[in-house]
Structures are given as C-alpha cells and as structure tokens.
Image (cartoon, rainbow, N blue to C red):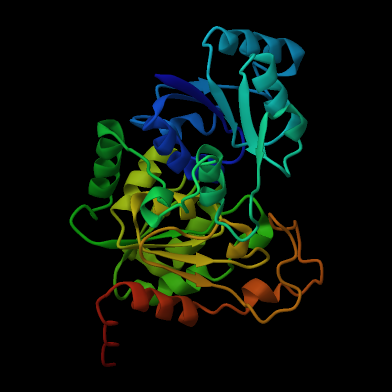
Length: 345
C-alpha cells in the first residue's frame, strides 16, 4: 500500500477544497496531511485522512528548528509521494528535507524548484479541480462533479452543540436561512445584510454565522430582524458551523470560508462577489447555488483576495448589489413563506 503526504498550510477555504484530493488519494493508499492549527479541526472525522499533522509555522514550530524537527518526523514515515497543495518555498523544501522521493506541485508555484513532478494549474479551473489534478497527474480523465465536491464530517459533539444552540434560541423546530456577513478582507463584506434580514424576517428565521470578530455585524442584523434572528457568531467551532450550515435552508455569504463550508455540506448558496470573481477558482460548489456580482464593471476584479479599500473609492462592486436582488436569487433556490401582510392600522 502506498502512503501519501498532502501539504496544505493556506487558508481555511483552501483546506476545505483539498478534501476531494484527500478522498481521491485515499482510494489508493494511506493519506496524511499537514495543516495549520486553525485548519486542523476542519478535517476531524474525515475517513480519507490517516493522520492530521499540525504545523504551527508562526508559533511553536516557527523558524529553522521547528522546520527541521518536523522534517525529521516526516522522514521516519517514509512517504511514497508528497502533494504540494500549498506551493510556497517552505512547503517544497519541507517535502525535500523529509526525503520524499516524489514531490508533486504546480508549475507556477514559488516552490517548484523542489518538485519532481510539475503540473499545469489552468486559471479557469475551480481551485478544487486544480488541487485534485495533483493526484490525477497521470490520469487523463477530467474531474467529475462528484469527485470535485468537498466533504466535511461533523461528529456527535458538533451535533450536540448545534442542538443546544437552536434549542436555547427556540429555533430547534423551525427552518432557517443562515447569513455569513464577515470576511477578513473589508471590501469583500457586502454592506446590506441588515436590510436583507429585515426583508427575510417576515418569511423565515435567520441565523448569523461567523467568528467573534463578526459579532458587531451580527448585532446590526439582529437589530433589523428582531427576535426572528439568532446570533451564532463566536459560539461555534468550524466543524460545528458546518453542521449548522448543513441544516440551513440556504446560506447567504460573501467570498469567504462559509461559502466553502456550504459547498461541503450541500447547502443551497447565494455567494456575493465584489472585488473578486468566481473565475479565480473559489466559487460555490453546492448543488444549488447562485452568484451575485456586478459583471459589467470594468474595474472588477481589482484584487485576488480583496483590497483593504476600494482603489477607486466608490466600492460600486458591492454597493450596487441590492437586498432585493439577493432576495430574488434566494427565491430561485428555495421556497420561503410569502411575506406576512402588513396589519391594518
């Protein structure tokens, strides 16, 4: 039986999009993966993974000593192949220092000098497809929709936490739509979640998902929707957030990690793209999804991640996506109750 090592120390969404590669490699042998401390919990219970190796490259494992300590540990595993899902020089050097004979990565990666096998990463591919191609390098077949679908595996602990959160909010027996208003990059945060919540609150319950940093955004949504909204920001682990999203009727999200959690859980998704575009490879993969974006703007896209502020100062790519438009897209995906009639004066 072969043994493979996948190195993925990028963002949370990248880790989710690496799960199709893990499943593909697991069909052929044992698979371990190196991830950051932040990403590691996402892969708990994943049947494709034999061992999750945490590389705290900015903390306990930082510097040359941490690098060499991990390289020695990996060397003892005698892996047949390494797959460089994160293409930095450090990742490539780590695979070499671990004496892994076959090292597969992308032709355009910064660490390509350390690879034995370099493959193309088409710009027009979804990133999940690009990553999957690392494992399919010798396979001429195109990745199928089924192969590309990411997967996460919340366990009993996550289900209990979500059960308790919904029960406390009195929403355990009611369908709801999840809203994810946050993003690390400010220009990727659509500014009208509160206005959308005010519209939707007459038709369904709402749950706001995100980290503790997103709590101020959640507060404005709760102010608009009243007791029809629940604040779950900062209360759930990543895998519990995936469980909550998996139970949702739909998710409305920016171009951020909840989008990929929804893809992994099969939740209908409305993805709002402003300075970035799905063509970068990070659009939704959920079976039912819609993308909102001002395609006609000549200034878009302006950044691969999202700039700190709009380079032109107008931020039209987000300001001109209206709550009415998002509500209409949501109606295309799922059936909500009709709006409540306004009480007679």
